[in-house]
Length: 416
Image (cartoon, rainbow, N blue to C red; front, side):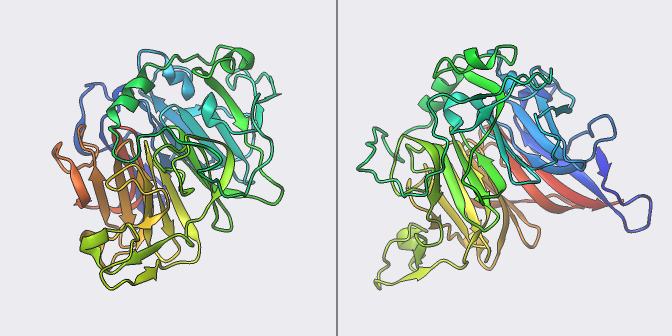
């Protein structure tokens, strides 16, 4: 269904349309993958779409024009749907947060969510290990305040670079199969939103379904967030990137495969990002080329961030796309993605799924690549792609994209 985006009935007005493809079992009555983009119906109560955020374990979230967080879908039979609205649902519904401030950005990982208010505050809920610090609030649906500090978490942000010598890594690195991780994820014991904050945080394997306010140092205002399998990135209003959570595949971009970072750390995106002109030799690993010469990636700060299952991506202000984490090379520092299909194109928006990535360029083109078992690349088949491949959608102008674990959402505009 097309959603009016404030254009009224005037000639030349644009409609905001939300497309979806891939596998989202809680929101698809037929329970089968969508191999090509289809439109998503508008939520009730006069809500209209403003932004989209991919969900992980079978759910999706979006932001309404009034600044409300909208959730729909379910997760699995273990009850992980409580990560979002506390119940299964094919119809998008508002999710109550313990703040009256408008939500401007949000992200959903496998089983945790993150949201940013208009004041730069960050709320997160879901897996306990994904919550770095802050205050846990009571059940959102009741409005009861059960505010408490998250046990075992530091309350201050650390800006120091993580050293691999300070924390050993037992990770198998970038060549490891992600299947075992996904299966162990599905087997995790979960708890529902009906439990108290105390019981929700009593076990490392349980969920804390209550939103937690992340504590940052004074003066730091977060403008955007991204959530992955077990890690989170946060982008400040000055273009700096902060990371926390699991980093065993280098997805935190801190220069090592540290298994767990419990406080937000600064990611050296621009300073670490160099590339060689010898594309065939390095394919964006940033190593020295045949002439022994490297070049600085265009840009002076980061404007977009994205987290996948075990990989991450960021976009510089000059439109350069940097990736790090599990993948072809498993790099632990941000490196330029130098693909022939992206020549002369500037990246605008980026999103990462379990093992796939979607990109919208400044010219309005959509590219997807990676794992495609459920049609999450939107290319009409289930064939994996190692390089960015263009997704053709006629009659609309793509604006933003969001990947879930097995699905992809696209926000676009079309003439009325």
